[in-house]
Image 1 (cartoon, rainbow, N blue to C red):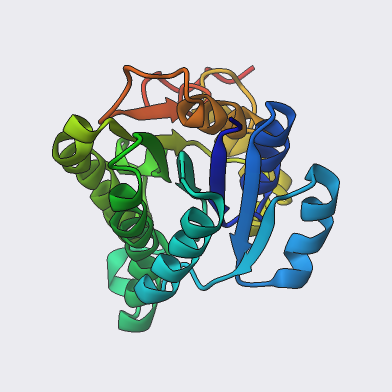
Image 2 (tube, one colour):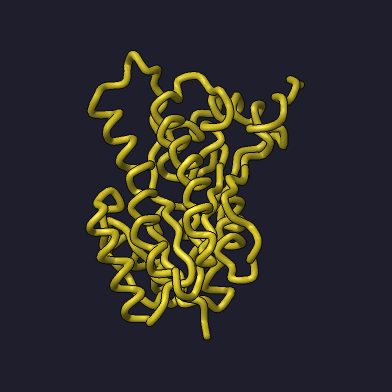
Length: 247
C-alpha cells in the first residue's frame, strides 16, 4: 500500500521540492495551500492524489483538510507544514500586527497541523514534520519575532513526540538556514547581503530548496522509524559552526 502524505505550503520552493521527492518515492501526495492556481503546475507534474485550498493559519480549516485526506484515503501516513514567513526587524520596530502575523503564519500553522494530524495517525502510526529555523537556535540580530515563533515549534516538537510516541506517531522538525526561495528573494538577490550570509554558513553557500526537501522527505519516509522529537539543522553549518574567514 502506498504511503499517503500531505504537504501544506506545497507551492513554496521547499514544498514543491518535497512533493517531487515524495512522488518519486511512490507516495500518494496531497498538496495544500492558499492559492490553487499556484498548486496546479506542481500537482500536474507530480501526479498529485489531491489538491486542497487552505489557509494554514486557520486551525479549523487545516483540520478539515486533514480529515478530508484521511477519510478519502482511509489513512494518513505523513504530513508536513512548510508554510512560513520571514521577518527581519528588531523587536522595537516590530509592530503588533507583524508580531501576530509572524506567530500565526509560523507557529499557529504548525500547531494546526499537529493538532489535526496526530489523532488521525494514532491507529497506524505516522510522521509529522514541521519547519523551524536555524534562527531559533543561533543568536541572529533582528530575528526576534521569527526566532520566537520557530523556537515555539522546537519546543512543541519535543512535547508532541512524548505525547504521541506510544501511538507510533513521530514528530520532528527541520531547521534551515537561508534558502533560495520567493520569500527570501529580497535577501538572496542583494549580492552584498547574500555574500554576508554565505560567510555565516560554514559550507560557504546558501541553501537550495532540495537541500531541505531531502531531509523533510527522509523524516516523512515510513522507514525512518526511530527518530522523533528532533529538530535537525539543514543550514550549511550556520547553527553550529563559526563563520568562514574572509578571502
